[in-house]
Length: 341
Image (cartoon, rainbow, N blue to C red):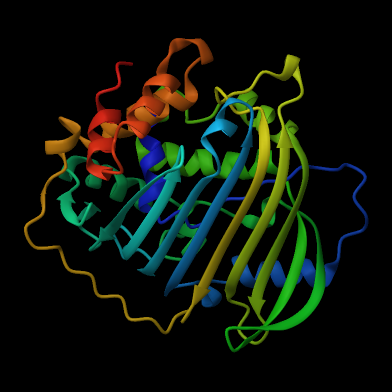
């Protein structure tokens, strides 16, 4: 179950969103629904390659607030998966955790995957890459952008409305705004992560009860989809959300997180006009030199800290790794991989 988390990272975190439902929704905007169908369901409008910019910022409330905002910035080039392969991508990332900044990169040739930490490349073990490739191949429409993740935004974008048109990086786009049914989105993500992470036997990544906890916590949200006015290809997704775990006595599924504000932005440029040629980096060492065995050990450590019960001490072990890593990303990976589950 826990190893499924890596799929989201290796996929360059192509999509995530938050929102809540409303049974008293007004009559739908047929033009907005039609545009969403054209953007997300028409194979001829799929994002086959692009330059990616992704930003994530969480301003937490609760104990985690002491560590300041949690931030991730990722950028680079990517191309959709070919038969039997991973998506190809060459991206750099920077993340801020507990006011410490860590940097690196993720690279996929389609058949191999690498991670660079502190400027040094490491090779992700073949067995895990094969597991990811098999999971991507099982996803419906695996060569067609978001379809490759088993994610259908039409299922969970609520009350879409056309908000007009504008210029974005020299392209005329149409804006559709709405909210998101988070339970349905998490169901999509869970389905993909379960397949790609091989966790089906463990019952999936998130239980229905956990998905409801997250969905019930949403106080407000806004989601904007910006689609090409002439080609109906996704150009940008923007999300803001506020949430509070206020039910069940304020208990939270993530220790130390009582609520917060989330900002996410996914921007695509050079859509279907970007050449993506990725080569294996020279001198890459096995990532097992840092993790002890497989990248799954690192993912297990992260997941154990986030998913397990609040009183088991794992979140404290993870924070100790972050604050004791001296801004060395490799040291952070090694420390988290050794968390005693």
